[in-house]
Length: 108
Image 1 (cartoon, one colour):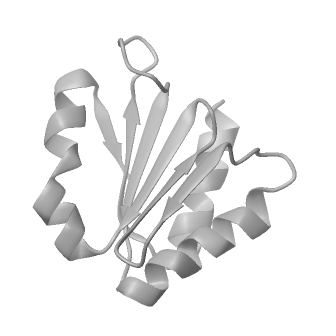
Image 2: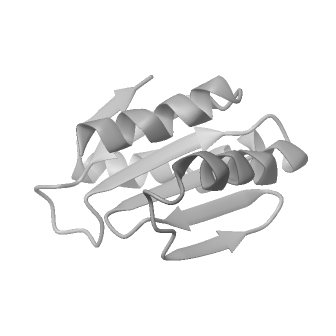
């Protein structure tokens, strides 16, 4: 699992995602084991980061569901949920506050 998470984070980081955080929810009562949140540089960059993930993680990773807009992308890999948001959406919805109550976060 650690290698999978590292690869996801590496793809995001290499493609200029910012403020990447990993929340380990493995021991918690949550519907996924891990959540990764990253900020994009803007609307076009949000969807571009999803394209990079799809290109570089398939066929090893199965994208169970993807919900996509220019401001916020959610990619469900089954046991890992990836949120990519514009900085405005990230501060508006402040998912970190909710997830931090459930798990210990790791910043990259």
